[in-house]
Amino acid sequence: MKDKCENMQPYVILNAAMTLDGKIATKTGSSEISGLEDLKRVHELRKEVDGIMVGINTVLIDDPRLTVHKITSEKSDNPIRVVVDNKARTPIESRILNDDALTIIAVSNKVETDNIVFERSKALGEKADVFYSKDSSVNLKELMNYLYSKKIKTLMLEGGSTLNFSMLRENLIDEIRVCVAPMVVGGKYAKTLFDGDGFDFMKEAINLELKNSYQLGKDLVLEYKVL
Ligand SMILES: NC(=O)C1=CN([C@@H]2O[C@H](COP(=O)(O)OP(=O)(O)OC[C@H]3O[C@@H](n4cnc5c(N)ncnc54)[C@H](O)[C@@H]3O)[C@@H](O)[C@H]2O)C=CC1
Ligand SMILES: Nc1nc(O)c(N)c(N[C@@H]2O[C@H](COP(=O)(O)O)[C@@H](O)[C@H]2O)n1
Image (tube, rainbow, N blue to C red; front, top):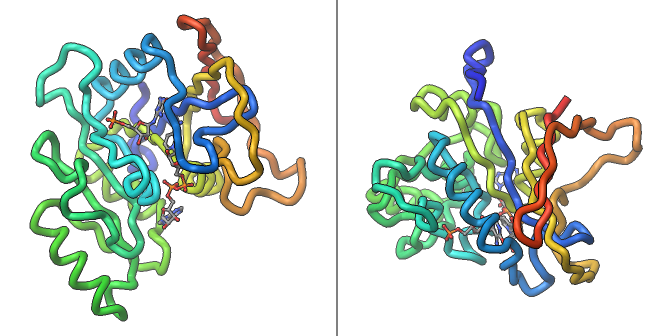
């Protein structure tokens, strides 16, 4: 993986699993999509990177560990975990705050005006490193520079769809690796690989180049470079 030292930003790989109809979770938040072989691939990637990042909704819905636990590993293999969490809503008892790895919680400038957010960020500071953004929604470029300064040279982005789109729109994603499972769930309220506001016109679309594709068990893995 290349070092993006010229921008002082980590090299970012978005990894996700989706159904053939592009959903990364059902409308109720159920998201067990990858087969066992793909989960092993995901954990090999977690072992390879310096950091792993998710949005706060993913923490609230999945309570993920974001450690390397589906393959043989040691604690030192776990990447630094990062949560993009405007209002410091990460529950203190959540698994992402356990002792398995360091965690960084990125909060917005709401800590300056909202006392409850300030108190929550202070409590989170007991268990994690808190990054304070200057903007009302975490400034992702600023955050990438901060993560790079913390020696995170490679970062795995693990969703959800809102954060995925913000990172894509800000041109912060270098690669997309997606597992397409042979299932269809439908539903206009089910999360897709990229949600957020979306673009208005096709000419604004982010272009990709397919670099690799292969079958893993029943799943298909597609690897793209973001152009
Ligand atoms: N199948 C898969 O590979 C994966 C599925 N998921 C699923 O995705 C769903 C959660 O996705 P979402 O609801 O879209 O939430 P999300 O996990 O993307 O979190 C979005 C939230 O992050 C916060 N945020 C702060 N600054 C932000 C910024 N600059 N840009 C964007 N967000 C910012 C906001 O509060 C925003 O609402 C869950 O159901 C989870 O299971 C999540 C990861 C992987
Ligand atoms: N690659 C992949 N395949 C799936 O089927 C998934 N549901 C996910 N979800 C991501 O993994 C997180 C759970 O991590 P832990 O096992 O608890 O460490 C979940 O929050 C999503 O980010 N990914």
